[in-house]
Image (cartoon, rainbow, N blue to C red; front, side, top):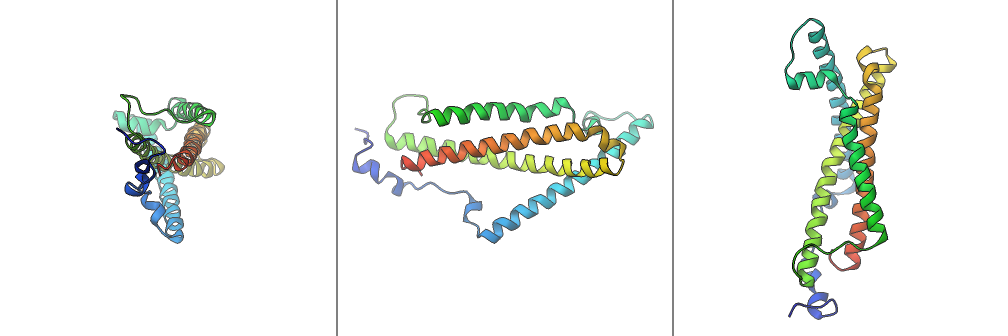
Length: 199
């Protein structure tokens, strides 16, 4: 018979199967700060490199050279077609946050599970969300780096930067909003898992 929520087996379940924290949580505060600074420097470098690359590709187009699909993508820069995915993700994450705030997460689909199996499934879901958030954070940081480079370029009368700065801003804002909303969802989900003894 599977253990109930009030049984001794269920009470000791968390101690037997502790949830592993993310590796960044195990770093000392200074190392975490250094990692954030490093990502910021990489993002700034990526932004400057992206603008330089777009300049070179646009110049090749102006000289009549035919670009490949990938080169044409970078030559076109940001557009509304590259800005909508971030906002779409932000919209769906908003719905998820609202749903989570209104009630507890639904148990995993499938046949009836023991308390142990259900908690293990919720822990796996939490780890997947943390991984997705890490990837989204990196993407948002890289886009913010591009935005910084294009803003500086626009202020210094760079024609390419001026032409794209608004769409780069829209794209960056979408991914940033999505990252913030997913962070809110994850923190709320973690609070509930801790209350249930799953973490």
